Amino acid sequence: MIETREINDDQRDKIFGVVENHFNDLKSKEIAPAKLTRTLSAFANSVGGDMYVGIRENDNNGVLDRQWIGFTDEEEANGHIQAFEELFPLGDQYSYTFLSHPNENGLVLHIAVKKNLAIVKASNGTVYKRRSAQNIPVTTEDALKRLELDKGISSFEDNTVNVPLDFVTDSYSIFEFMAEVIPTSEPEPWLRKQLLIRNNLPTVASVMLYSDTPQAALPKQSGIKIYRYKTKEEEGTRETLDFVPISIEGPAYTQVYRAVEKTKEIIENGKVLKETGLEDLEYPEKALHEIITNAVLHRDYSIASDIHIRIFDNRVEVLSPGSLPGHVTIANILEEQFARNGNMVRLINKFPNPPNQDVGEGLNTAFNEIAELRLKKPEIIELDHSVLVIIKHESLASPEKMIMDYLSKNEEIHNSTARELTGVKSADIIKTHFYRLREKGLIEKNPDPKKRGRNTTWILKK
Image (cartoon, rainbow, N blue to C red; front, top):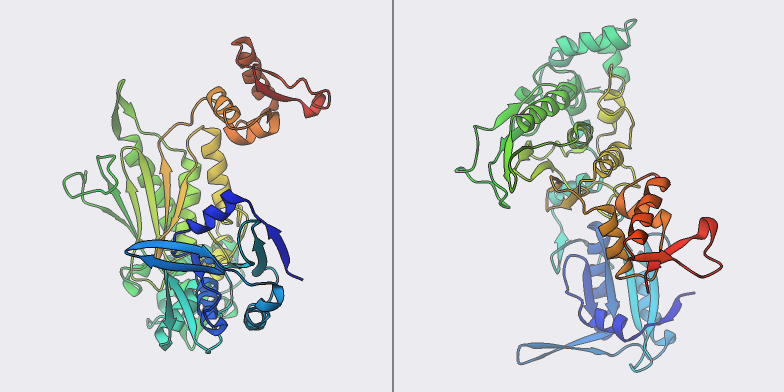
């Protein structure tokens, strides 16, 4: 049973104002359902999206005019629903809702598509991927393999590397690891048991974990570059580059610790000009560690590009090759877990003092530490073939200002809401801020008798 929901003028106007892009599409009900499945396939194979069926677009001398011309009733939409549900069944990945409006004709069908782990075809048997407002057919074998890697269906870490076995079986790294972790075994039998040797060749995962020089076997796709730009501009330039970029090489475990150490050293040696003069540039070390670890362990090793750490006067950027894998999106990245390189994530955790001590919690740890330091939370941006994490050197507004800003848009605020808003974990400290604002005559306790004790909320002083 598909729900029918009545919307108001504001909600309707938002639909009329939707920009057709990577995430949204508006379609007339006259378009054949089979053709519309191309858009649904493209959304499912990318990062998800929303399609509204029943919105007609007219081009009036270059001005786009949108009209609500929906289905007369649910029965008229049966052909569309049947065509859609055969390929995109109602459930966790796909939801369908009929939208009605008291002053508009008919029902608009809203289809919400989540990013799908599987590769999804349209009714013509073709796979599509969304790019901007276009549905791009994925037809070549190479393109399909690329999509499988992007979605996490397959992992490049399982591919073999055409180097001698002793590249990983007779390295300092593997002997050090075995001596510390599994002293009763020999390298080669153990690596075979872990499926890190296939057809007598080491896999990408074994090279990255246990070779002393993985960059010799995987050039331009297995290292880290660190830059320092003396600017706050959006892009760094050669003129603002402080020194020749530093290359961090070696096995994954070593890379993480060396990259964090070098990044911290560069930051600590840097000064930035502020209104009060030159000041130290500081960032939380644990957050840097977690974000760099995440980049090394979850990057796509099939892409010929290094990880880039760019240090600016007001931020640090960590660019990791590869889109977000599986069902992970920007919206759910802190709640969901999906390891593109499962073997690397699992095995590096066996090292002494593993960089990923809390498996699956790295980004949460980073966000929490940054919140405790009252810096603005990191920004995560998914680009075409990479993920960018930006750590900003900007303090949050004071808790009291944030409380007042919240109350300027909302009727009341609860202690728990204020803690979530400000990043302050202590309920007692938030109470102190409430009391200070009350002493200034700005807020007061909600007089509603139901808002007492644990339910106490605060409102603007009348």
